Image 1 (cartoon, rainbow, N blue to C red):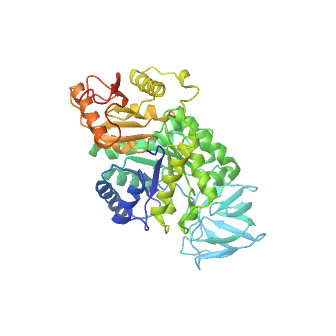
Image 2 (cartoon, one colour):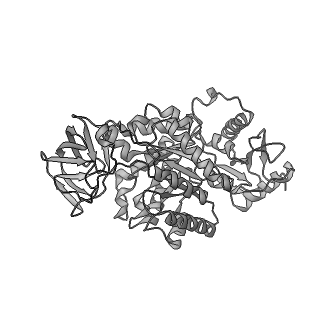
Length: 482
């Protein structure tokens, strides 16, 4: 069975190897994430080249997602690498500490974000190390934030800081991000993920920078907004409008809004993305235990399955494949869970499908293909496409019929690799539509997707070769063009 939900895997020390990466792609990886929070520019350039080489060996186009670090607000370094914070004890976060080389101790530590004292006030709650340590702000004195430890524990170098409820003023795009966008465009990443956006403006600025940097290569990436700030939730519609997709980044988001709020937000974000013809990726700690264990917990299995049932386009592995002991097994397990979840119940077209409004001819053809495929129970839906838009619109609605995007564009093949329930293959498209339809049939038969006598629905644009020109739909009995 073809798996509809896609898998995004982060590569790092555990997977930066041609043999391992090739096995991961064969196990089911559709998109490879390069995390710009770690490593140097040259590291990412070399890893991108490795991904392209591994994908070529597998005979598969795999998308590359460049994930920007963003304004991760962190503590500085400690004298001994870490301290033990005790409940009820005072502790100072000092924006000036470290300017002369001072290291942190059990009384105070420096900050890499010097504006933090301006953003907090007495009574605020600060959460460190993904919420494992909780500090209550008692006063702010110049560059010093005086706190009392509510929940203590080990605090080590460079751990992150969040303010409960959000409200930190750090911009979404840092100077580092602006340089990293240029690096990502040098190897023409297919997706650019922006961390901590608070508004549409953040995404519009990132897109503009990416388009300028990519102009020399004739390349424009698709933009993914990582929803991880409390302020992003009320601005979700405008962020969606300015993006090509969102990532439900549950780590920092949970720290800011509280763990209990995240499951409902996840469902809401995935639903909104689908309704707005955008993509959705569900991320963070999906298979966390597989960093050290060969099998996941039952809770992790349920987590992945529920994201699939929510309608996410993709599930993502982070440390599990970047630095864990079992990167290949993690991908295999995620693929198996996704497939089982998808087969658990018959997917009917959305109940409100007939109420969908559209004004474009190509969009109406896409929806017409879904409706026809659903009622005639065809073997496959085939979209002959330049840009992939037709396949995207089709993929926003649940249907058992697999969708195949046949395109002459390698870039479109890679981008489509993230779309739920869509597989992309290369097919050159001349002006003769009858010949192209015959070639499409032959490709599908050769791949074992259909056989003679099967019924398929095909969409294309006439004249062929124009972007955004899908205007034709045909029900085909395989073999009639042979």
